Length: 239
Image (tube, rainbow, N blue to C red; front, side, top):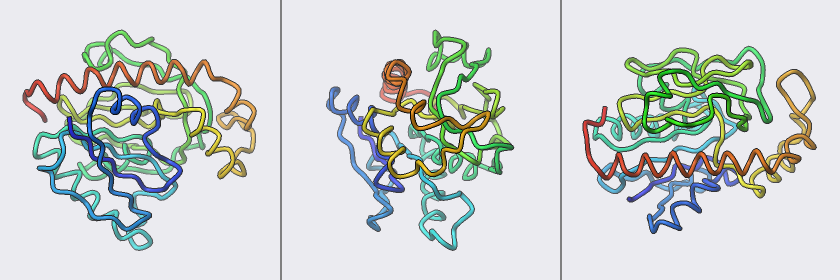
């Protein structure tokens, strides 16, 4: 399975997704916007992976490549490709497909549980996940209105819309399941000034003090990717 990664900043790379792809022999190609690299055509990949970043989906004047990125996302969906967006990536998919992205009532940074709903339990991509899963968050905005045809999959106390699916192979996750110890240390080192303790913002010590949460997240991500791989390579209806 050919995977193309849209990476917005050097810090936010695919983490455990990269490890999963290497173990299974799936080639990874990149568009690193911070290096002004070009976007691919949809014929060159089977799965488009859209990572996070500190920019907002509406900052096209400051980041002109956002418009082209959204155009590629729409084209990938229309072509029946697999599309997975994480954090900012999930917001970009939502915006590109006609949803709405706005500021979340409060920032959500740290390890907090999401609750998977019945739609998630009925979807083979997520079936069997613990109904309450502690996952990693670092966001200020969220997809406040889902794209047409999208199904909401999860919510948290701090953010009522945490995950969605469009069709059978387009998925947006507001939270992170891909984080490794290296990624977590990088977040704290580069962005630790944002960690002012509040109801939904944890301290650096709390972020780095739960390797067991990271291990579970990586396990769930691998399970999800195995299922998504089977769905993409097995064909089917797409959206």
